[in-house]
Length: 332
Length: 260
Image (cartoon, rainbow over all chains, first blue to last red; front, side, top):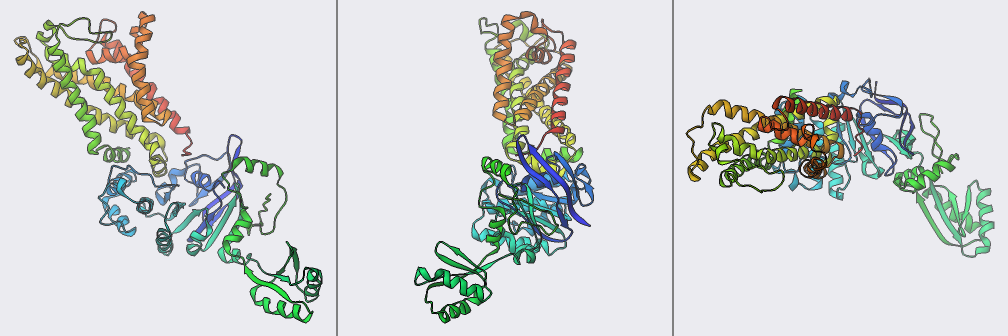
């Protein structure tokens, strides 16, 4: 059974199309990354899944129940929604007790979650005295209160320093190893990729990719960049490499060869055999983050006016924008 | 519902809230009683101000005159408290966690309402007791005869009931405005501005409206009836305002999109 499934989920705020016909599938078990630039519709999607927003159209299910009836799964789902939200003058423990009472849970559960997130010893301090990292951990403690089958964490690494991000990542891996389903959203794939087994990429409210992280990894590309000593040799070098079966592109006077780092030595040899001396040769392997940027575009999704223009123009499909579910996505 | 009530009470029971709310109501009752005894019989104290006469203080129910004098101040504290408790859910973002944990939103509203009602009852009880104690002390200090003071417990209970009813409706007004604006500051300013300033302006140009307006209704409830409005009518109007306010909040909450 899928932990989350949506069909044509759409949310519009006036003229702004925040989520566009989203078909989402999150299988039960494991850690799923839900990534996209700021303003791509991640938080809106999560809010619809949790009953905070109602969809403009489309449908969805969480743990087998319709998102139109969130009360049916509320006690099986824990969530951190955007930023930690607590009464600052109350202690962490009092805040958690208040939320536990709302869910009909005993105080013993508060002890357990405080222990899990490592806040024991500071749990009686006012939340106002907490660092952002501690507030994030407290928010995760609140999400863990119902011992949820499904844990949805919206930008849990937001505002954390590098050490905090590493700590959060290890907490996510721990939580993911406990048999529950984790859906973790982030605008930076690099921050959560170490914890994820699957990844869903959205941009401009549309799904761009959904599948195992390993499948996204296969979309990374590599190239060797080279330049002949004499510019007039560039065309001849491209021809020689083409004859040897390489795909070559010209860019700013340099040549780009679609090949991994291992081919650099052979490219160099081929050029030498052709009597061409290279003044530059470098190999580059695309990172997952670069794949992510290539898919989502370099534009910050919060720039709604740009987005609006792009939505009007786009109908052109770019490489790497076909999801494993078969949904096509277009992008400008 | 009890879960929501318990959850709300944990959040309301913070020392600063209790001191400002319950303590504030008690303190205003005491100060108003002192002013009532000190300034008894004064005239020309300005529009909307009521100072009991020496005869009223010496009457059988003279010990609650200060409490009636404090009713609007207690109401303002109640309005502020309800407004802060409601708006802070939005200002801190806590509403996201609350609605996620209890998606039946009407329960959140009704639970909060009962929690705030308990607080208001505690505050007005503190105000009643304080006002009575202060009245006893002031009678001795200002040489007011207490020979006619009688039926203490029933009269105090009735004054407490009236004050609690009035403060609850004040509070509901604060809750409604805070809920609609998501801001305690706006709610407090709007509520007080309307009841203390705007309604007096309305009364200045439409004196026959005094038996329908919220402020005069609340004053009449707290005082057990006034010349303008009999207690029964004031109570009916007050309950109508209360019910209308709750219906507005429950309806808006049901359809509200939690975007922030």
